[in-house]
Length: 284
Image (tube, rainbow, N blue to C red; front, side, top):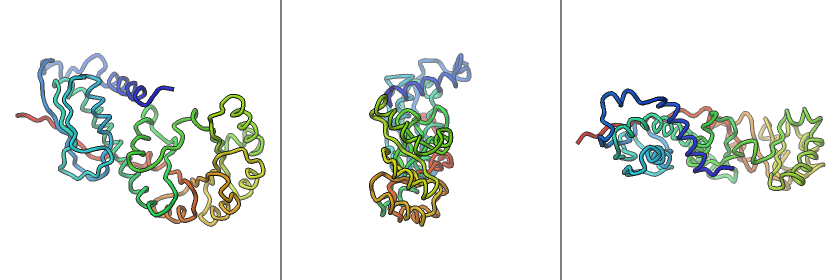
């Protein structure tokens, strides 16, 4: 697998190629290539800042010798009127990177801000908040990084780094027992480092999982808090537990109070609203 930096490099390369195409004609027509300039990232809305390191890498991809001066860090609280960073580079670099930097930071900051709200509600509980695979195609890397910056934790990054037996896997396989046995055999023979999680839809499902064993985590999908308490008594700490489905800011603490290990929330990413930021030229 590629490292984070390698994946980010590829993302930046493809995103700039998509935007610039055969040339940034708006800049080519009126700005000499060697013209140097300065710009600042202005914060226009409160929240949790995310994407600072990514912004610097975007500019450096186009022009390694840029001068990038950060005034805030990823994960910092931000207020309208503050300046996040200053960049000095050739003007074509600033203009060609502007939209990618803003799109990335606005999206990441929105996710980090929403995640922080969820995580803050769990500060008095042992439960940790998880993201899901409900992400934007080809932008998952940075959406999940934004969750981490906001105080959440990443579930599996994709289909490759954990076995997760969900309802359709179980139904196609012919039942929970068959699915677990096949997954366990697979890990023993072909993928010894993969953990196994299995989704359950009822207390009866939990009992069936416990009868087989051989998993690392049990997902309790669309359970009420009372049902989760019942399931946790049966599981008795033998396996990690994860609550999922129908959980939001209003009922989050009632689920955390059950003592479940993890709560997974797809909304951290797919319901987040971008934060308003702007990149403005500085004319001395």
